[in-house]
View 1: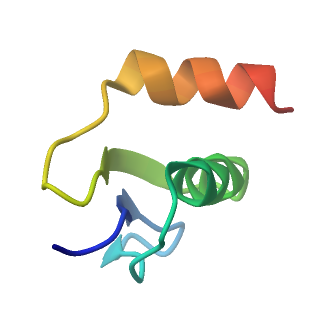
View 2 (view 1 turned 45 degrees about the horizontal axis):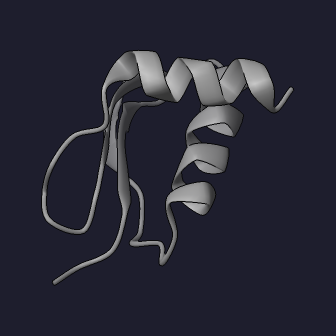
Length: 65
């Protein structure tokens, strides 16, 4: 089993995958930070390879400004 990952396109138009994180909270915080730095989020992936719904990621983001 692996950790949480964030898949995104950075502001330099490069596709990236974050290093593995141990918690959902850390992955969502990174996704939020990347969004505000101008990156486009593809998905947040849990340790089982399942993708969190984009609505859930955006809701977390709006609750933790």
